[in-house]
Image 1 (cartoon, helix red, strand yellow):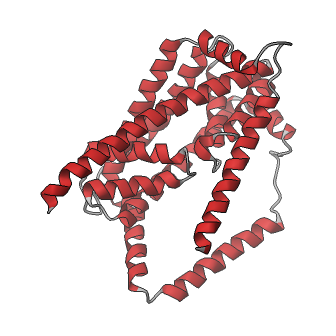
Image 2: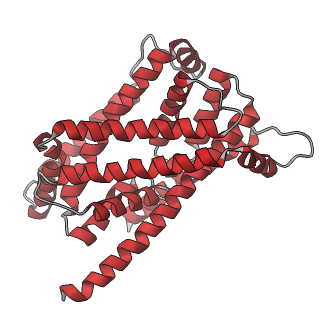
Image 3: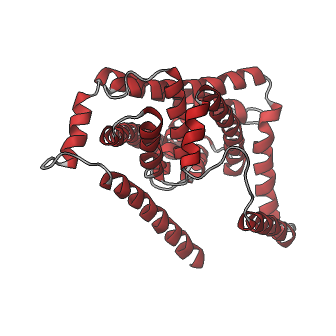
Length: 333
């Protein structure tokens, strides 16, 4: 009961932070006297090039398909060959759940795959964590590339936020947190090391996590990872081209905004809502001198369009998964 209340409280806090950040962003949207903010956002949508927005949607779905193929690859070394369709459906359901529960999508996609393919959740979850480690490496490479391309602008931007690029200090609170986390892991290990069920779960998790080192075709895995992030970049490019206010921005600007947007999406808020609406407009205004109302409107419309695509594809995937599971049940009896 206490764990449920704690989870509920955490979720409420996350939702409140999300709405607070969105409210702050909307509050800073200054429009002409007598003009409605909702109408201003709608006008931004109407001015957008729907062809580029449709292209962004297609690119997004291709990137999700490649992510499903990459997940297939990771499960082969641990003894599970899954169908591409089931992998894709589970990935899309994961994205849908992430819009409501931050990081809940990783668990839900493993559970959905278990329902479809009977793959042990602890093993598939280990492969998902392995995926995330690889994605973090590519994210760091991306951030490094954006700094090389726009060093002066980004250092000025970070300095204005109170972050220095010449060095950093480690807070005693961070050190204390790391130590507590380490002691917590040790406590769990010694407390439950004789628990057979937990040992089985941890063993499966470790097996899935190390699957990336057992791949037969590691170069193909790296290619798929590059393709995913390359398509993410093209999504940003297509959206920037879709709006007159941003269509003239060059390659380095697209790379920088892509990096800022990706960082914003990693914040544990539902679908990056709030953090995305705060960080990206600030970057557009400070780095590329876009008028603040246009920057905010651009981000709201872009994020709303991207979220709509995730909701529609996720709900469709959820319905299809449900029908498949229902259809198979009589055959399993």
